[in-house]
Length: 149
Image (cartoon, rainbow, N blue to C red):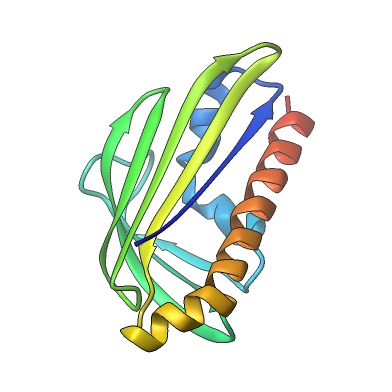
């Protein structure tokens, strides 16, 4: 299982950041890789709600159905893979108060979509793409939240 974790400090309240993070439609603009999101629920998500997400990773379009498995406003969101091209995927967002606002830590844990070949491709390309997406997404989120305070 590959594990990526990054943190960012955002000049906004934890409540404001939480509301922003739970809005999956933002993700289309936050991540490169031609990401598309389709929510399978209305309003704010509840545990058990799902959404479809797809994007380019290592040159291939990969798809997933993700489920909200834990929602603890305003401090924690956990998403787990229901089905998709990855063997396994978990996205955990933790929010904490920090001086000047909030600290958001996002952790992606995943198994690439291939067996032994996937591990080699992960080391060469998938991990690099995923690191880039995570860093870009958090930077764009920070920028958008701080701009719209």
